Amino acid sequence: MTALLEVRNLSKSYQGVKAVQGVSLQVAPGELLAMIGPNGAGKSSCFNMLSGQIRPDSGRIHINGSETTGLSPERIFRLGVGRTFQVAETCLSMTVRENVQLALQSWSTGLLTLRAFTGRLDRNFRPQADALLALIGLDDEADRSCRELPYGDIKRLELAIALAGDPKLLLMDEPAAGMAMKERILLMQLTSRIARERQLAVLFTEHDMDIVFEHADRVIVLNRGQLIAEGSPQSVRADPAVQAVYLGSGALYAQGH
Image 1 (tube, one colour):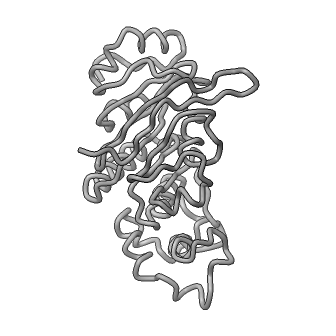
Image 2: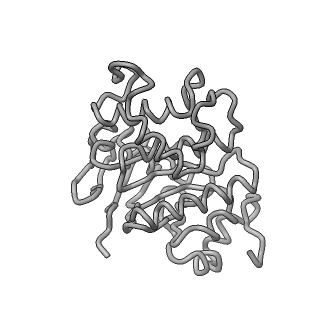
C-alpha cells in the first residue's frame, strides 16, 4: 500500500547538537505507527518538523503525495494533517459543540482564529459538529461548557477538533498523557477504530508502553536522534537494543504484556 506519510533522511541540529540524524519512516492509510524513545531521543523535533513548526536541516517529507518539507504549519494542515497535543486545550468559555464548530469554520475559511466566525455562532456547521461529537461519543455533552468536562472528555474533544478538517494524517503527541488507565484505553480504541474506518494514517508518540504495544501496528524507536529499531510491537519489544535504551530509565515495559 502506498504510504500516506513518507519521511526520508530527516535531520536537525541545534548549535551543533544533532537532535535528529537521518530518520526515515512511512505510515500507510489506516495504520497506527508509534514513535517511542527516552527523553531527548528526538521525538518532539521529528513531530515539529513534520507539522512545520521547525525546518529540517536536510531530508524530505511527503504527505499525501505532496512535498511538505519546510512548509508552514498552516499550509501543511491544509494539505490534510490534524494534530493533537500532549496537553489538551479548548476554549473553556465555549460549549463542547461550539469548540468543534470553531474548528470546522476555521478549516472552511482557512483562518485558524476566532475571527473566522461570521454570523451567529450557534448556527455555523452545527450538523457537522454534532456528527463529529457522535463519532467520539460526546453528543450527549454538546451543550455543556468545556470548563465542566473531565480531562478524559477534553482529550476526546481534542480528537474531534483534530478531525474537523477531515485529515488524511493525524499526528498525536502523547495522546494518553494525564489520563487514567481506563480513559487511555478507551481513547486509543476509539482512535484505532476511526483510523480503520476512515483510512486515516496515525503517527503517535507515547511513554506508556502498554498503550504502545496494545494499539500500534508498528513501532519505531529513536535514541539520541537516530532510529535504532522498527517493526511489529512483538519484534521491537524483544529487540536487545531497545531493551538497553530503556534499561534503568523506569520505562521498561513489564514482561508478558
